[in-house]
Amino acid sequence: MNSEVRDGILPAADGVTRAPGPPEQDLAKRPPYRLVAVIIACALFMEQMDATVLATALPTMARDFGVPATSLSSALTAYLLALAIFIPASGRLADRFGSKTVFRLAIAVFVGGSVLCGQATSLPFLIFARFLQGVGGAMMIPIGRLVLLRSVAKQDMVSAMSWLIIPALIGPILGPPIGGFIVTYLDWRWIFYLNIPIGVLGIVLVTLFIDEVRGETPVQADPVGFLLSGVSLGCLLFGFEMTSRDGELPMALALIAVGLVAGGLYLRHAKRRADPILDLSLMAVPSFRLSVIGGSLTRITQGAQPFLLPLMLQLGFGMTAAASGTITIAGAIGSLAMKSLAPRILRRFGFRNSMIVGGLAASAGYAVCGLFRPGWPTWLIFLTLMISGFCMSFQFTAYNTIAYDEIPPERMSAATSFYATFQQLMLSLGVCAGALALHVGMLAGGHSGPRLADFTLAFLIVTAISASATIWNRRFAADAGADLSGRRRDQD
Image 1 (cartoon, rainbow, N blue to C red):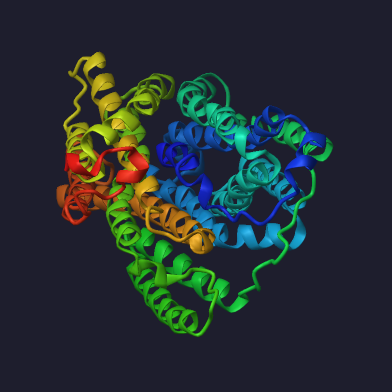
Image 2: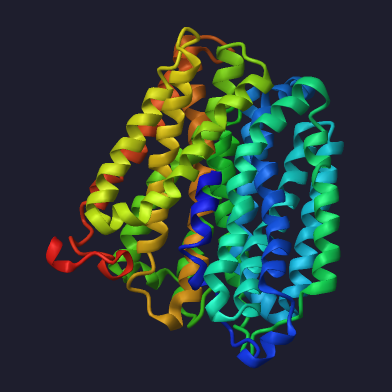
């Protein structure tokens, strides 16, 4: 889940609405671009830490709430669902009310949601608080990136993005061990309280150093489209998630039915608008369509892995939260190692060949995760996770870059909103798929708690989904993205 965020920052950066900002000569009066980048990075670091720390704490939180650990998937899904619903509206809100105002409000909402999460005494309350957190997160990162794009001179953009991405790389490495330490030696509620000082610092810095910027021609609001798409996404995701719980199948099927009806109504509505909140006509662009489909299948596996792995290490292996958190940083380290190699790999082998091989390697690595057993050497588990993280992170870098290869500049904003929404939607569906696959294994085995064989089955099921993306990767043109990677067309 977090590798998706890390690898989506840079490739999609040019896709955010570039409403005309101030003239280049006025930028000299603004704060140094490094300061602007670091301020935005505070919000990014807070969100990344929160996500990685929480995954380590799920078993402990489940015991406190008196619910099965698999039920905590609802808390993860609620957050990702909020991202999927509100990301499309974030750019329009920034253009209407100002980037600074909305960015500062987003941080405040995220911190408020964090406080409520720390005060939660039941699973339904936690789900509500996580959804509120997600509303803040949905506005924080896209609008933060928008602030950067509108506040920094073009010649400083690459350097500014480099400053921005540092916390995105560090957060997932520090998150699991810090989360494990808090859960083992303190109280899991401190996971959420950590966001308070970071958020307050971010609000103060935004107030002092970020200027208010609005788009000159804000896109017209689409409240009907927002409502229909939100109802559809919400009902479908929670319906799928509820299928993994005993005795809730009728309600799950009802939610899925409502979601399908709302989705059908949205499709009819979108055809009548020139600027729908989610522009489905973008799927007619070949590279964008293939990236959305292949990337969606891959993201289902990536969404399930952070949910399944900590549970398997703690419930199946008997590890403490601190020990499992230390091991799960391997994927983040692999992602970090990938950063310097990805451009050279794409330049040498091209997008299509690299994505076919990388996708199969990533799927194979996650399939091996399902075969982990307590007798395995720790170094071998760590190495497997690091290689898997490397390969999966490479896939996301390739998908997030090639998606915009054929998108014209005037449609870049709509493409970014559409793609970012599908990113979060598929990651949410991945959590649902992981929980459902684990539940199927428990039902087949006839026991109430998950066992190692159940985790094996779950990993193999979600891995098969990402492996199927190879079908779509093969449909990319041999020279797809040649201009992006710097690969000569005569090499193909």
